[in-house]
Length: 217
Length: 100
Image (cartoon, rainbow over all chains, first blue to last red; front, top):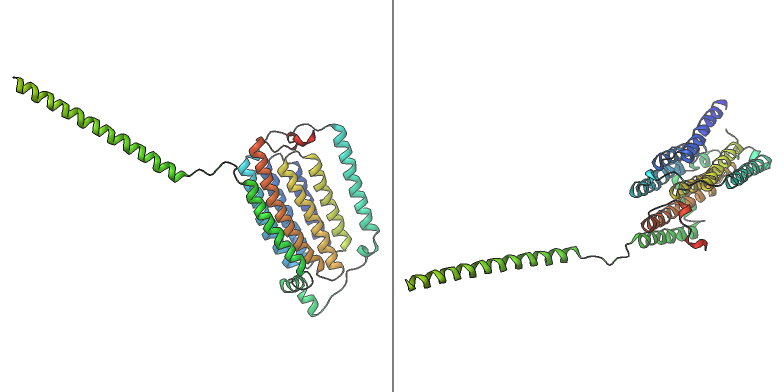
C-alpha cells in the first residue's frame, strides 16, 4: 500500500517535472524529448491502472509515431533555432496565470468533492480480472459496442492523410526533370556536331586553297 | 491500491500545465505539444475512471482519443509546414493576417 503510494508520488513528480521542462525549455528538440519522457511515465501509470494494452499503444503511437513526426517537423523547419519569443504583455500573462490557477483549483475541488472518485474502485476477480485491459477484451468491445465510432475514426484517419498530403503539396507545376535533361543533352550534341562540321569545312577550304596555289605554281 | 482521486489530481495538474503552455508559448510547435499534453491528461483520467468502475469502456475511449490525436498532429504539422513556407516563421504573433 505505502510502497505503491511512494511509487506513485515519485512517478507523478517525474511526470510533472517533465511537463515543466517541456514548457520551459527554449529549444524545441528538448521540449519534444521532455514530452516523450512524460508520455513514458504516463504509460507506467496505465500499467499500474491495469491497462497494459493502452500502455503499449501509448508507447508505440504517442511516444513513437507522434513524437517522431514532431521531431521531423522541428528538424525540417529548423525550429529549434528560432529566436526568442516576442514579449507578451504583463496583463495578458497575469490574466492567463490567474485563469489557469482557477482552472486547477476548480478541477481539483471537483475531484475531491465528487463522491464517486473517493469511493474504493470496483473489485473485479477471477476470469474478469485476468481479461481486464487485455487486447482481446478491448478489441471485442471495440468491434461490438463501438463499431460505429471505429468506422468514423477510420474515415477521420483517411481524411487526415489526404489533408496532410494536400496541405504540404507544392503549388508550382511539377517540373519534368527527365525531359529537361534530354533536351539539354540534345542541345549539347547539336552544338558539338556543328563545331565538327565547321572544322571540317575549314579544313576542306584550307586544302582547296593549297591545291589552287600549287596549280598556279 | 492507489485511490482514483490521486490519478485525477495528477491529471488535472498535467492538463493545467498544458493550458499554460498554450497560453504562454509563442512557438506553434510547442503549442501543439501542449495540446498533446492536455489530451494525455484526459486519457489518464479516462483510464483511472475505467478502473474505478471496473469497465473497459474508458480504455476503448482512450484508444479513440489517441487516434484523433494522431490525425490532429498529422494535419496540424502539415499546416505548420505550409505556414512556414509562406512566412518563414511559426511564431503565432506574426501570423495575424485575418485579424483585420
